[in-house]
Length: 122
View 1 (cartoon, rainbow, N blue to C red):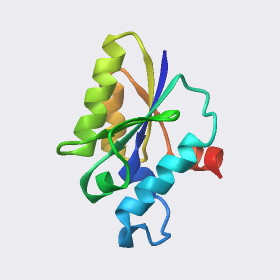
View 2: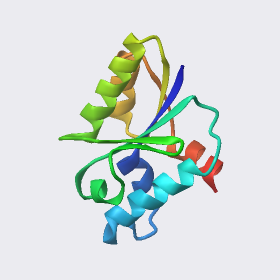
View 3: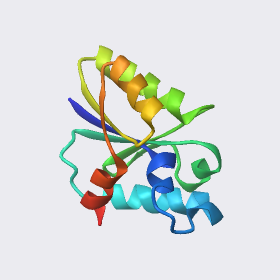
């Protein structure tokens, strides 16, 4: 299975559009935008952390599966990559965070930047 994991905080933070005034609203808008298009993956996982978790419930909602990080969003993403890679899935993470990209690669995944995702959803 091909799995796309979205670093919600990093993607939302890649645009200076006032998201910091309404983190839950920004998370909800991101969820809606990625759920509205076919990204070419069997499953899309949106990882939310902190205050953004109030913007979207955990679980399946249409084409998007939302996960709430209990602590660090990066740690939750790496754990998702490890688990899915162990299951034989091909995993791609959307993030611009250089350290997270290195951790994702070490866990068996690959990554693309937020601009790729934002171009798909615009």
